[in-house]
Image 1 (cartoon, one colour):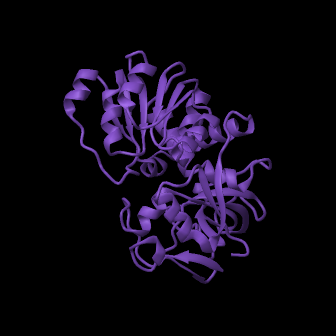
Image 2 (cartoon, one colour):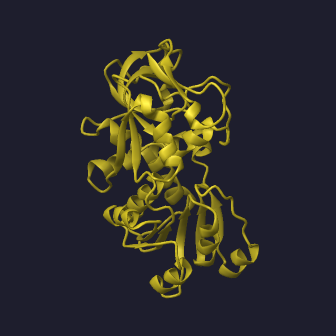
Length: 325
């Protein structure tokens, strides 16, 4: 089978598209014939050696794959060959066939496309966990979403609206701001003069929840824009700059800074994670949320697709098509 292999940590351009043996599922595992593979910003960090974990090389990157089960290993009574599923793995998804632990595999409704299923995993899963468990966002609150046109940003906008929040999105270009509005944002702002714009749009009150996957200078603006009892969510650092926080801002605002590490959540709270997925799938079926697919590319184009995401040029979700790769 074809797969994308990382033989050594470094630029994504070093990834190789090559033939490898098809894996066999072990106890508690299934083998999935992938119909779609999700591409995520952390995948790019992983192959560069910049992510929180560093698998031993060589390894196959990728966290999301959706398709049909081909083979079921021992001890997996809940699935059978032919079942439509989506899987979350620590790595190994950039391949035509993906082995996954059955407890990280979710049955799909017949109406859900494989592309959408991948989109609802990492990016939407991160945003959902951030807003549900970490921020405890409530209907009627004001949500600020930085990096609004990225896959996690667009997910946060849509989930915020599903919960009933007023959403202020921030993005770097007119086209990206238009995408934020199309995803349901009430307002879309540029980064320029953001501090004054947030004062104006909130009547000086500030925002209840800030969702920040960007870091850098925008983090301080968000910290200064918090309402009393506000929650500032630290999602990631797409800007490449890990910001420092002036603790007096937290004191004066009586706000909270809350870390969001979705990977740890998935491993430590599997029942809550499964419940979150059920809510996302239900919202999708009811038309309350809608994914935005930015690109569909052959598996062989994985390096270029990853670089585009690292350069912050993607607007929404990137999907790799593995068959005929």
